[in-house]
Length: 338
Image (cartoon, rainbow, N blue to C red):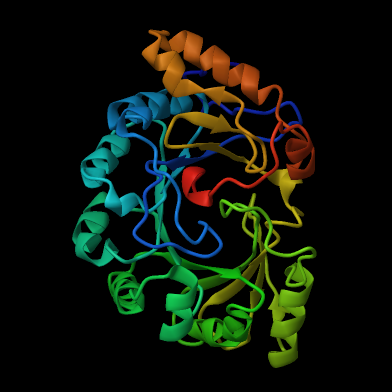
């Protein structure tokens, strides 16, 4: 992998399996204003002390280095990104970074509505809205908070302002499986993609089930039973979701085999946690702490070399990454980035 950019063409960054790396998922905080069943244990998690979280200045420097290496897309995640102060200022800094072409956000939507004008001004490329049910009672049971009305307000605000949106719905046995059709029906009149995601063990406790019954096969079978005309549609390049569409419906449906890990062969993503830990796979235990290198005074060139070394040793898939861990997968998704 080259670490220099040809002045005439954009750098392409590859891992050791020949997969291009173009997409950074950056978790800017581990804090969240919801307590979702699939993300945190019942009593929440112990949040990182503030000094352990990367500063926005450190994150900006890191993104500049990665953009210079070939990363062209960043998704801001959490925790919940809108609970961190000065997020909008940070997004404007990202907009100035040469080579960074796309900025996306994943949010639970509770606080997002009041920032819509700023997101429009920033020309945010898309928003992924976490929404696991449209039923207020089940929403409270899943999130342990009574905030569905705020999320729905954000949903309509994003639509009305023409901001591209995807809905992320984690499918949880005994929690929201009866909601699949109601959520799919959003695509009838709205230009939105509703994506059903297999539940993963990143909840601070480990897997909730001895066997994951609601895998991507069962999700698809359930949708096809209700929509016999459901059609397979073209997937986006490097997509995690298998795409489908109901004829005459405006939106699309996606199914993400996040636990089954069927898309690893084309994965173009890396992750950085709030404390600066690089994860070249969601299922690894972390391969590098960029925050510590920065605070030790490393120059940009040395940081770039550290990234390249990590990318040259990337696991071929999520199963290999999980096997290489020293601990069992049980951390909270809020400490990793959704």
